[in-house]
Length: 438
Ligand code: SF4
Ligand code: SF4
Image (cartoon, rainbow, N blue to C red; front, side, top):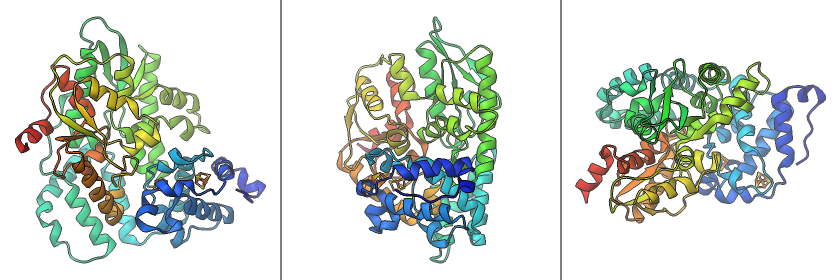
C-alpha cells in the first residue's frame, strides 16, 4: 500500500511504525473472510482492510479522528484473527493500538461514553476497587432489565450489570506477595502475573496454577509491586495509564530477575499474556526498553510452561468430554494452538473443537460492555457452536472468555483448573455443576 506521510510526521516513532505496517498491506482482502465484525455486519469498513484504509487516512491527514473512523475502529474486537489470516504479515495489532491511542488524544467522545470509559479505567485494573464495584453491582443486578431506554449508554449499563457474577469470591491468600516453594527438588523458579479482574472473579485459577506448578517442582514467586498488565487501558487507547501499569510490573519483575532470577513469568490469562509479550514493543523508545524486552522474553502462557516441564496427571481419566474454546489472544495473539489441547488430552479428557473456532466469543476486554450488541451476537453464536459439540464442559485459557461464556448451558472452566484436578488438586466447581446437570 502506498502511503504519503511527511518527513515531520515520520519523525514520530509511532507514525513511522504505522507507516511500515501500512506498506506491507497489499489490499488482497483475505482477512475479511475471518473477521467477526465483517461476518456479522457485512460492511467493508468493519473489516480489517476497511479499517486499515480509515486508519491510514486519519494518520496521514494528521487531523482529529472523525466520528466515522471512531465508530469502525471501536467496533474492532482486537481479536487479531486478521493477523492469522493475512499472507503479508501485516501487524494489525500495533496499527490498531496506535489508532486507538490517536483517537483518544484527538477525539472528544459524548460525555456518557467518556464517563463510562473513565469508570472502567478507574475500576477494572484495581482488584480492591473492582471487588467493591462488584458488591454494588450484586445489589443492582436483579434490576438490570429495568434500566430504561435503547440508547447505547442504557445498553452498556445493562451489559455491565449482567456481567457481574452472582457471587463475589473471597480474596485468596495465594494473591499475597510471597514465595511458594517447590515440592521436592527445585527444577525452576518462575514469577506469576496475578492479574487484576481475574483474581477477583475467579481466584481459583491462580490457586490451581500455583498448586500445579509447585507440585511439578517449580518455585512460584508472587512479586510485590506487580498489578494489572495494562491491557484493559491499552485496548481503550489510554496510553499513559497503560504504560504506568506496565512500568510497575517491569520494575517489580526486574528486581526479581536481578535478584534470585526467574526462568519464566507465568501468565494464565491469555489477554494479559499477549500484552506482556508486547512490552518490548510498547517500551521500545523508553528508558526501560531493555528491561521491558527481558520481561517480555520471559513471559509465557501457563500451557507453554506446563508443556516445557512435562505435565503428567496422577488421577485416572475422568471420562469427560471438554469443548476447548481457543481464546483469540492465545490462538491469534500468541499463536498457541496445540499445547492446551494436548495437555487436556494428556490429562485424560476427550477434547472436542467447536465449529468456527477462529471466531471471537465477543468478550475482548471491555468490548462486551462497550459494544454489547455485537458482543451479544458473537456470544450466542459461540455458545451455540459449543453446545453442538455435546461436551459436558467448556475449557479456555482466558478469564474474559470464561466470563462471557459462563452463563451458557455448559459450565465454563479454566484449562489449568482441569489439569490441576487431574494432578491431585480439588475438583473444580464447574465440574461439579456439569456432573449435576448430566
Ligand atoms: S489480508 Fe493482509 S495484506 Fe490482505 S488486505 Fe488484509 S491486512 Fe492487507
Ligand atoms: S482484530 Fe478482529 S475484529 Fe478487528 S479487524 Fe481484525 S479480525 Fe476484525
